[in-house]
Amino acid sequence: MDPRPPVPPDGLARARDRRRFFSNPLNRIEFAYDDTNLIERLFQSPWLGGKLYGRDYEFPTWLNETSDFNGDPSRISETRLDKIRDDESVAANNNEARSSMDVTQSEAETESKPETSQAQMPSQPVDHAGGMARNPRGRLERLAYLVSQELNQVIPNECAQECGQAPLEIIAQRSDEVLTIAYEQLNTRPFFSVQECWRRLYEDACLFKVVHILRARVASFGEDLSPNERLELQNAPQDGNWLSEIIAVLDKSIQLSGAPRRRQLHNTIFQKLSEVLPAGEMNKYPPAFRIYEPWPLRTRVGVSKADSTIDLVQFQEWLDVITQPLVIPKVTRHWRASKLWRSPRYLMEHTLGGRRLVPIELGKLYTDKDWSQRLMSFAEFTKKCLLPSRPREVGYLAQTDLFDLIPALKADIMTPDYCWSTPPPSTDEATLKTAGLSSAPSLSEPIVNVWLGPSGTRTPLHTDPYHNILCQVVGFKYVRLYAPHETPKLYPFGVDEKGINMENTSQVDISAHVACLLGRNVDAKELGEVDREFPKFKEAQYQEVILSPGDCLYVPLGWWHYVESLTTSSSVSFWWN
Image (tube, rainbow, N blue to C red; front, side, top):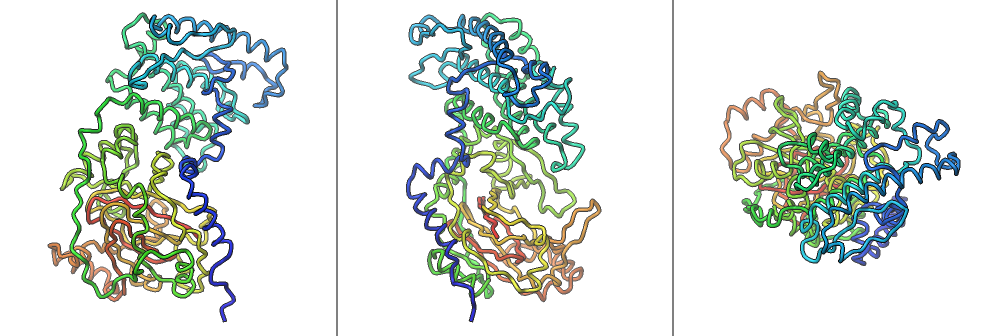
């Protein structure tokens, strides 16, 4: 008799709690931000008009002058703090006086400014019609002010000073030079071995550069310029595309440094910039992707498929009785993404008009010699790869934590309850030899990745050290699976010339065999070469399926799987253990 209970009580309790939690739409919205301290951070943040100290342009020099500071504000004497507040309040008020001269008479009548000795944010004119786009100068000036003030806030346990005094002394005025210094440190060693101080330096240098671009944009409106504004206008990007420049700087900050301390500030700037997008900009894109349903797959080795959506208890029973792949229909039909992600306009809107940078794989397969990766604007990716019926370049947004880059999109999906099941420990010797399994950490939350690409994008035959739920959101995908005991017939790679372990990937390119199965024209010579080079491959037994929108596929731990998009397609995968 099997001593295991059919369903772990903890797993069921978690699932029930999640269903109750998400039954309230407010909880779904709050959860989408993935920031449990969001409310607390907002009330402590200077964005809501708290006491603001610090200069607009300079990194706070008193951090360096106070030798006994060491990142602990409590160690600074009250007399010292009073002097800092007085000096910097005067500096801030001088900047405020200059800013107030730019306010028109009608704006001044609408919003009066109280007299105070404390530093005040630039006045925000009342705007009843067009948001930030209605008064771009005033709103952009306010945003620049807020970012500069945030940069002058003390961060507990700050480590940037470990980079030395020189870059900190010039970071406010010469951010490009500091970016070069920090980038050299980030680019000369693996990311996990880079000291946090260099990531912090790169992050803050990017934000100071954003302030310069914003102030230069404000200055370009043609009114009387201060000396600082003239200098910033002179050093600003000359291509005129200031919005794309800011977004690129912020995205590189996130993707190169990880934005270790000011990630919320990045997201706030993105949100504010969304208010200045040109009106009607999204209308140049089609309202929906062209997606045609492929011919049904005629096969004798299809993946098992449930008759309808199953619940967590039924899925746990499947795991306990037979750990095999399973297709579950209509799982994502209730997701907002199932409708909204069909529209290029919607995706453009949530990527700031397509200006956000995303990592794109270029090439047929990542095992090919000409395969590469590069950061590309989402608009360029869409125009070159997603919209053409026959794109010249194959580009794939693959295995990307898109919700980390664009948190607003996370509200469009929900983690399936199946990810809170408990797969029984495997006793299969072939499964226990899955590449990477011994070093895979225990997960408290599923690892979520997004896959978006045109027809023809492929992921070669490979394994993952986790159980996997692959949810098909838009379009159609072909998937072929091989059990772990078929591994010797699939010819895994070893360690390549660069020292990278590729044991989780098969040397066999099965795309020609799949094309033949799907009725495409295939060169018989190509098929023959595969069979001659890998003679045991044709003996391997497999299962296959075409996933439709709404389907999810359970891929057990250690199972080999090949994935190919048959149309423009978006999917979300959930790894758990």
